[in-house]
Image 1 (cartoon, rainbow, N blue to C red):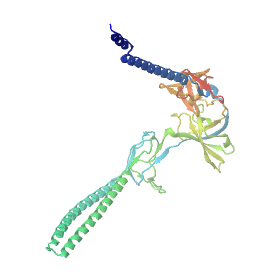
Image 2: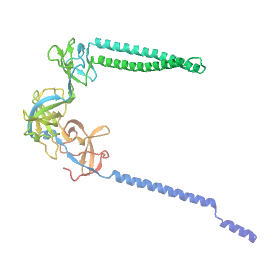
Image 3: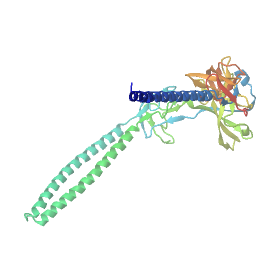
Image 4: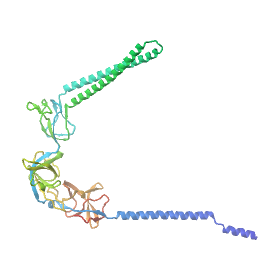
Length: 418
């Protein structure tokens, strides 16, 4: 082997293989990408773990047995009557004779339902007359429009002939006047059509007034008129004219109006819990609470009217029933509620403690630094309280569970909890 061939072989051995270097560089890049992805996944897992396990700040509340919660003393009593916030004596908007009455006392009606009809022969005739006048006005408008089109064609021909001196200037001016007169006549007739259309609408309204409809859903508690009687929206002062057809009450709006002596009105405030007892059912104590104090006094009786809402309506509660209301003293820090016909094992909890999870009503029970989810069966409400079954009296609950709190979640109780 010659020295030149030895040198060439040595140089070939010392040459760097580019493909091998590129493969090594690619492997190193893939390793760095894999390491970065793994680090991101680990960081996300750490963040999720820290956020998921971060304690939720909550407030506590204690479940109180219905029997224990029903003993607060009555600090004031007042008498009144059951009233309906929505009650209306329905009449017609025009005077007329009843041709049909479709309802009876005690019947449930829906909003918009036809209660009665008046004799509409006069209104029907007026509507037919208005329709006929509208049709005549439209026909006259079409006739005037045809005449205007002809006058404009005649004017166009005269304008072409005047340049050829085939007609006189007076004839051209007459054609112009005729076209302008018919244009004004068409405009006037359009206004006549608009007036006739408005007259039809007015006649239709009067015809609609002969149909008496229910203004809201409710129960007919009084039927004051019969078929054949004359109805008027105005009281005529004697005679045989009725002012109302029927009285409708929305049974879902029943409440109590009581008169409280103005010397004791300071003991009552909106939201205050109370017990209502109907004169007809003296052993039935109905949960209630104050809606509002009407800001005016009756100077002849020295009383102030207070509106009281029932905790839950019942078919036995009827308008104008006599009722006695006991306003209850509240104890700070614990829910207080009036007695009611509740199943055994019922407790009162703040209404905000009952939430929905997975379509179920649940509460969160405090166990050390954890909140445990418990299914409950909710019942009646009274003020800011809710009757539930499923937890025992004395159980400490989360007052307003946030949406991110789940079963077994860590919690920390607010230090200012009262």
